[in-house]
Structures are given as C-alpha cells and as structure tokens.
Image (cartoon, rainbow, N blue to C red; front, side, top):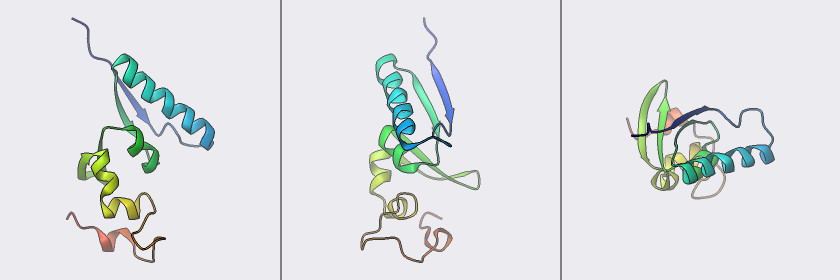
Amino acid sequence: MATPELILLDEPSLGLSPKLTKEIFEIVVRINRERGTSILLVEQNANMALNVADFGYVMENGRIVMEDTCARLREKDDIREFYLGIKAEGIRGDRRWKKRKTWR
C-alpha cells in the first residue's frame, strides 16, 4: 500500500512577482489534482490561497480562530474586509481588525 503524499509550502509567493506567483499556484493546483497529493499551504496572500485551496484556517497569534471551506470563508464579511480588502459599501474604512472580530 502506497504512503499518501503531503507537501508543506510556507509562503511560496513571498518576494515573487505576480506572474511568478500565479505560475507557482498553478503548479501547486496541478500537483494536487493530477497526483492526489495533499498540500498544506501557509500563505499571507489570502486571495490567492482561498482561490486554490479546498479548506482554510484563519490563525491569530498562533491560534486558530476560524475554519471552514474556502468557498464559505470567501463569503464571510470579516474575511472579505480584513483579508481581501472588500467591503459591502466599497473600499475598506478606518476600522481595524482587533475592533471588528466577531468570532471571539
């Protein structure tokens, strides 16, 4: 019986141009889909990570404060505002993350 494959990637987009970042993430998705390899991705680029991953965790100070499918995380107001820069009324306002968190 074959051992399942797992790849851990820590900030694969760090310091890369947008074009290279896109290429790296396309390769990661292809490895996952074609080889069935599980990928554990740690990434500050929330938009890119939520678009390629199936499931996500939001960590704050080393503690998981939210977890869900990436499709559901992308729809949550807090995630949209503080990680994706999208606000229902338009551009992000003056509010700060620590004043807004709703999951504590």
